[in-house]
Each structure stands twice: as structure tokens, then as C-alpha cells.
Length: 296
Image (cartoon, rainbow, N blue to C red; front, side, top):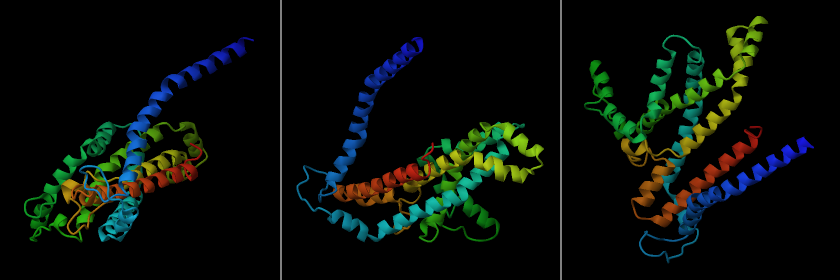
């Protein structure tokens, strides 16, 4: 009887919490997420410059115009390139450093903070700093080139190297975030499993491959999700470095939206880009959750 009474009280408490906290959360979600998305979808059907009320209905023409634009395909390709580099270079680098720095030794905390500091730095500030680093006349890269008697390259001014310069900054800035995720996961592992593997004669490489890495799969899956979503939304680093140029060579989808939609007062066109980006992100998020993170 006492057990039944406790169970009823718990159910009443859970119901009260749902009644008190769910409606405000749903209201805020509706106001700041659902309505803006619906509004953008509505505006994407108009040829509208943002002034007055939209009246010139064009239907799917904005979407067709987006897909016919060369700069959009470049932006889509660049986002894909950022995802590939993040998965193949940034995350393995972060995991390697996490394994090296997870154990407690003198200077470990300082090294962790040193590698994590780039992530703390604001994206715009990072972009401005590297715009001086990449300066072909007075920057750090130019100074290194001059040591070998060569003229400094203008990396950000060339369509062949501008995206490479951005990729280097992306790796430098965000690998520390993933490293800290992996360190937290490593410190939460059951040490008994690792000790048991060592007692059974497993080498350090075998322990990493067959014990540590499999136990880190949840953290790795989460890190991959953050890396892909962040790559799709990259904007703040691009604008102070190249503004998407030269000749749209370093555009991402968000910088393309800003440059070709907002700056040119093509609100309907920009809204269509935003809807496309939302569909890509939402499709990836739900698919990834359904097939990769379904047990978490």
C-alpha cells in the first residue's frame, strides 16, 4: 500500500512539472523557432526587397534561381569540404590529443587550456587575427616566406588558396572543443575494463583499439554530429577573412545567404536559401538521430 502511495505521488509530481514547465517552453519554441521558419518559408515565395508588404508572388522561382546560381554550388561544395576536413583531420587530431592529455601529469591542465583557448576566442576576433596573419605583405606567413627569400603569398586574395586558408583556421579553432569532449569521456570510462585488458596481456595499442575507442563511440558520435552541423552553419569566420570572395570561391551557404540575400535586399531569395539550409540541417539531424544515435 505504501509503495502504491509513493508511486502515485511521483506520478502527480511529474504531471505537475509537465503542466508548469511544458507550456512556457512550447510557447517560446513556437515564437522563436516555428514562427520564424514559417515566415521565412512564406517570404521565399515572393520577389520582395524587405520594404512594405510582399505582394509579388513568384512561387518556386526563388528556389529555381538559387539552384541555378553558380555561387550556390560553390558554397555547397565548400560546406561539404569543411565537413570532410573536420571529420578526417580535426576529429582525429582532437582524439589523439585527448588520449595524450586525459591522464593526470604535470602540465596537463595547462596544455588542455592552451588547446581549448582558440575555441573560447570569438569567431569574428579569430577572423580578424588571421586576416593579419595571412597578410601577404606584413603578416606572419609573409615573414616566414621572406626568411627563405621569397615573396609572401596573398592567400586570402587568391581563388585557389582562400578556402584552404579558411580550412586551416577552422581546424585550429574548433579541435579544442572536440578534444575536451573526448577528455571528459575518457575520464568517465570504467578503469577496471582497461586494467583487466592489461592484465590479460593486451598492449597499449590493443587497449586503445579494442577497449578505449569502442567505449568512446557515444562521444565520437556526438562530436561528429556537432562537427557536421557546425560546418553547415559556418559564417562568422568567413566574413572577416574573405567575405566569401574572391569571386565567391570561399562562400559557405550562410555567407552566400548573407551576401546574395541580405546585402542585396533580396529578402525572398535569401529566405529561399534559408529554407534550403534548414531542410538540409533538419534532414541530417533527424536522420543521424534515427540511424546513428538511436540508442542514446
